[in-house]
Image (tube, rainbow, N blue to C red):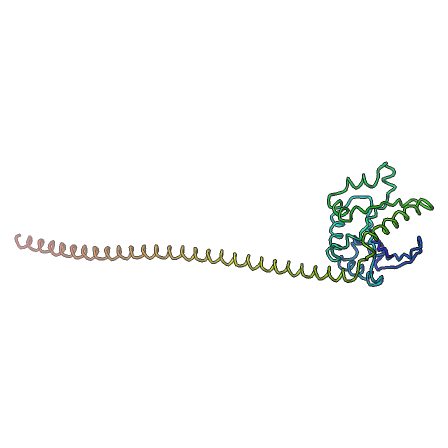
Length: 268
């Protein structure tokens, strides 16, 4: 039997393994890095947790997701989803959610089930996908009281092992989950690339239409300017012709006036 603990605030940076003999069962416990540990990247934590599958071949019978009786944050939700994304949906068959600080609930006279009714819908969904396998620990208990809650946890694990027909989470499952993740990433990249190409094509069409509109506007203005210029040229030609005619008339009148003056002098 194997139990893997996935803490929310673990100080563990590497997987550590311990053995125990309980109820005639040889139990192997592996403490993994906390999946909400902000000191390490999700990818690094994922890689280290994956190592625990190798060192416990053929694999674990249970993953204990350790949460605290406190506010469930967006970062915690993203970390769990990242973990599930890379280990596959089969991981939910092996998840057991363990809440610490049950003493806080005891002080309020509240049960763990009553508390679950108050948690965010995202956490409720995770618990539902774990088939409701939830347990709470009082960190202040010692001796027989502490032993009783450990027995409750082991009983829950054993019952779930039976539900899974003794099968554990294997390297094959992890590889298949990794393959699906790779395929999803490739599909997402393909869709993103196609979407980008579509956006670029749309932009090209917009720019092409804009270019055509700008060209048409410039051509319209050019034709208008040409007509204005031709009109001015015609007017200039008309003005030039009128000017020459007037000059000719002026000269004619000037000569006539001079002749008149000469005739007048002769008569005198």
